[in-house]
Figure: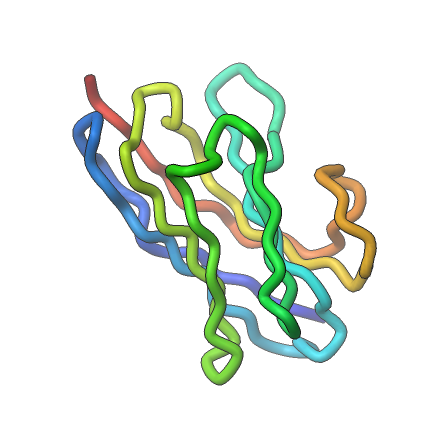
Length: 124
């Protein structure tokens, strides 16, 4: 199994920044790609972006392109989500997830391990 633990959430004003971390442990060698998802109140969980452990290749949902950046530190088995120019509509619980799949996909079902989530609240 792969255990994932997010941290770094909090309350920030619109226009501000936050950096989320996701520390992976356990059978991390089984993980090929790490994704970030978010779930706002009353809404479905949605894909934010993802990164591969080996090449660091990334992909993002259009709504965060240019504002959010995903990076990874292989030595620490940690993935980061740097969020800049935050908007109130970015308010959500943010989750990291792991998949062994080599095929990029925004589908939740593609990911088999999930963290517990961290709350991000952006005030206007």
